[in-house]
Image (cartoon, rainbow, N blue to C red; front, side, top):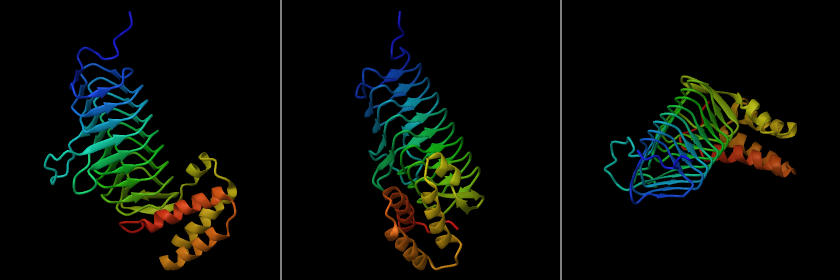
Length: 266
């Protein structure tokens, strides 16, 4: 006899909407205004609270808290949301919280991410696709994280910081300013250490593509130029490129520098 998809000890609010293929483990609690897509697995002792949109193929492990009220003292119980894409893995004791009305009221998480044990995504954060947050890495409120970012164990990201695509923060890094795309930071307080070359190679980037980004990095970080002057040279380099993949990745770097909200980490 097959086991039921929803364990009899699970508590599910009548207003929650679960696809018929969703699995729910023992003693998990699913509150009101929670929508869960096909193929998602909810382990034992998980708490889901709405408004929560949870996509397809996600897997959530025991003791995770997803969609709980945020920890901002200004929060007064307003209806806010957490929206999560597909195929994410959320490990033990991770905490992912809803937004606040001081921002858009929504915390957004993309697809294909790995949130290891005890990771935290604060209110109003935006996380892209295919990111890895290692054990105990934490995002304060309003942090924006791009695609393919790696945050190593115990890395902490200050509120309102932006982490660009394919950037990396090393173990125990305390990041209080923005990290551009493809850049690697380390330390307490964190400083820029170079490009995330290993991540770029794993992504299969060509030698020419990497060399373009190395030139752009050198202009911004090593040539003692004013930022405006350095970026003009980077943009001139972009205009000279003909390969579309190379242009796309150099534009990621340019856009992440120009979108900085707290100033660039140095």
